[in-house]
Each structure stands twice: as structure tokens, then as C-alpha cells.
Image (cartoon, rainbow, N blue to C red; front, side):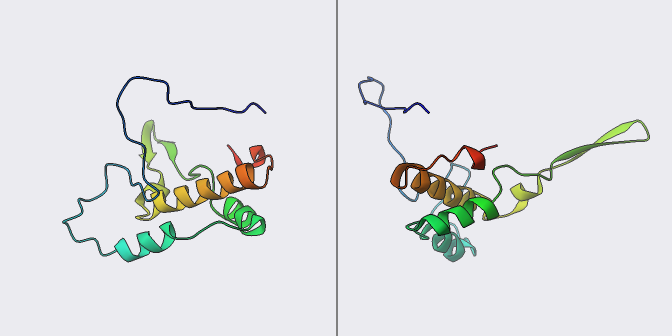
Length: 116
């Protein structure tokens, strides 16, 4: 498996995400979010154990398995990915990514079995 390195020798300005980075579709910091304590809780889960990291990678799927297109009586109906309706979806995906990173970077394990 090849290692990818990033040397910062490019000239375009950008900022790197912070540890608790959230995608731009999140509510602004001034708005009320009832799920914010849960978001912070999931974000604060540290992956420091290989057994725990494996459990996370097994329990949290690498892709959403529920999105479907149904053909019924000549019409196509789209059922959206139900995991996108989960308000903590992004936090769980990031937790899974932290677990994969821990296994690959800290433990030196091959994580290809956990990647779709």
C-alpha cells in the first residue's frame, strides 16, 4: 500500500480543518441546536484502543445501505438515504474515520476490509 504525503509546497491560500471541524451545512454558532450536546459528545470520543476502533468500524457502516430506486407500475420512486436523515450522521462518519486513522496510523493495520 502506497503512502500519500502532503508537503505544503503549494501557493494557494487555504485553512486546514480544526479537530472539531463541521461541514458548512451546519447551523451557525448563534442559532440554537438542541442536539449540540450530543454532537459534542460524539466528537469528543477518543479512539485510543485497537479493539474499540475495530468495533466502531464494524458497527458504523462505510456507506448508507438504504438508498433505493423503486420501479412500480412504470414509475420510478426514489427513497433517499435514510442515514442522511440522522442528525448525528456526520459525527458518526467522523468517528469512524478517526477509528480507521487510528488503526492505520497508530497500529499499522491494513484497513482495506473496512472500506467500501
